[in-house]
Amino acid sequence: MLEHSRASTGVKEPTDLNALADEYLRLAYHGLRAKDSSFNATMETHFDPDLPLLSVIPQDIGRVLLNLINNAFYAVQQRKVGVTQVTPTLPQPTITVSTQKLIVKF
Image 1 (spheres, helix red, strand yellow):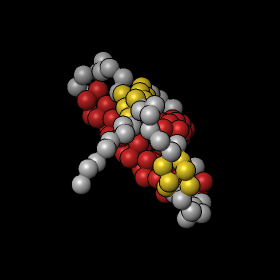
Image 2 (cartoon, rainbow, N blue to C red):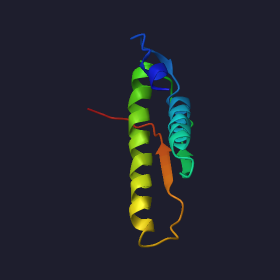
Image 3 (tube, rainbow, N blue to C red):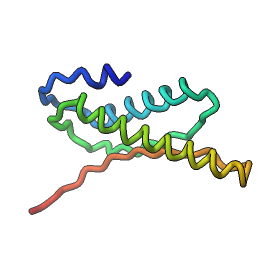
Image 4 (cartoon, rainbow, N blue to C red):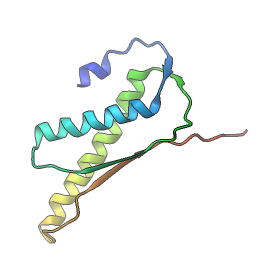
């Protein structure tokens, strides 16, 4: 998975960030589940349907997304491990990924 994300061409191309974020969210989740089949989390997405294609290097942005999402999954996994010793019935953790088009004026 990481080798695929590292195969950067270094060329910017029009990219659907919603699709990229969704792809890496699922890759991160399945990667974690492959290591720990007992891990479960709810994944929520709130993608801005009006987000335009952006000229970026998809592999580079994908690597950033993958790191952020992996960190989020790791954090909820660690929290659940620590808290379940005290409170055995916790709700399932939720990871939310959202996009939003913002207009920045200088």
